[in-house]
Length: 182
Figure 1: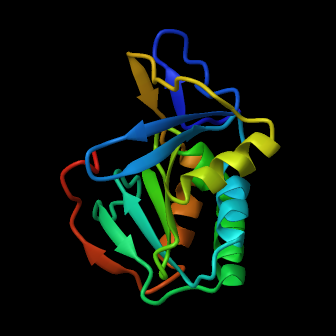
Figure 2: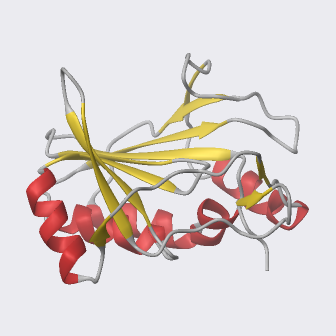
């Protein structure tokens, strides 16, 4: 099976047993969510309660097709239905290939989800509501840490998906920023 991130020593997939971890910083709080699988449906379920519309930021860290690494922002906000169609259409690519991060934000400011190439979901917004939803789905609080060393996989099987995502919109491009970790 193709996977996004693995343990470098034994090349096995890294995943979590449906955990969340509260993170508090001086200026904000967030949840770090580690799923056993199916991160895209979870993001969509958390977005479903929001008013929308939604912005998408596709952060391409490494292209196997020669595309410029950078931040690709959807040119206009998407309705929930458009977001759902886009994410489900490319679900396997987002969940199983490590060449990108995906950001989904409510334009109204209700919440933001960053699904990164470590299979983490960073959730910003109504933390207590997210925790209630996660616990109702069997998630529990726990520590989520990436083992070192680890590897990110960029699968040839997903090259056509990289191309399809690149062609999905007339993306607004900007260079990678510090912290995007190429």
